[in-house]
Image (cartoon, rainbow, N blue to C red; front, side, top):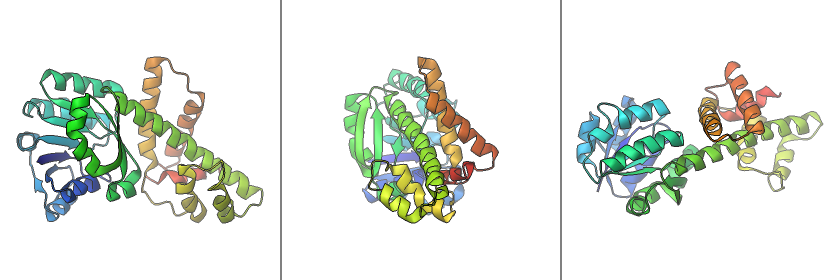
Length: 285
């Protein structure tokens, strides 16, 4: 089976590598030349246009940075929906809003195409290991046909409902990621300021009721102040903007979410947008 993959960023590149490891023929496209050359070295082939990629692929996966890019790639004049053959399955692994996913899905179904909004969670390490969590929205039959491909990139794969519900599930997760990150930062400052040894504090908390994935992930970087850029804060800012849009659409009151977004916006103003989200401890320290 030939799989097209558009978007070889932090997550897309290791995901496409895992498709190669699973024995699929992978055809890649990306804005940046470096990742494409790297994938060619691993045995992938390259398409120079969406039309070329679409014409050669039975399934196309996309892992893109934002809604604007997703809309262009899928719905643009030279986009996927105007170039793929009937019965091709399109898998959108990007984090986008459910409204855009439904727009893409409606047009895809109208053209006799399969479509899943199937965002991912787990970060770069799990993308490399092929152990991502994948939450897919779409038709059951389409999901079952795509499941072997999804399982090559993730160890936990769920169909969570119709088109759009993959995005809703991912944004729910991202709200927790953002809130838990800030909670861990504030708790760190509280314990440290009151005299607790930071390393021992987090060792104890890691097995206590206050533990969270974000606490355990961020603690070493908060202590060392070596933040890097593994998961830039700006990515969560983008997701919080999407969450705000969905909340407005459905009339959902998010008092904690609103304050969380305000603090992430403040972090951006402080110049933390391109630094790992663990650096949000600087908001409190």
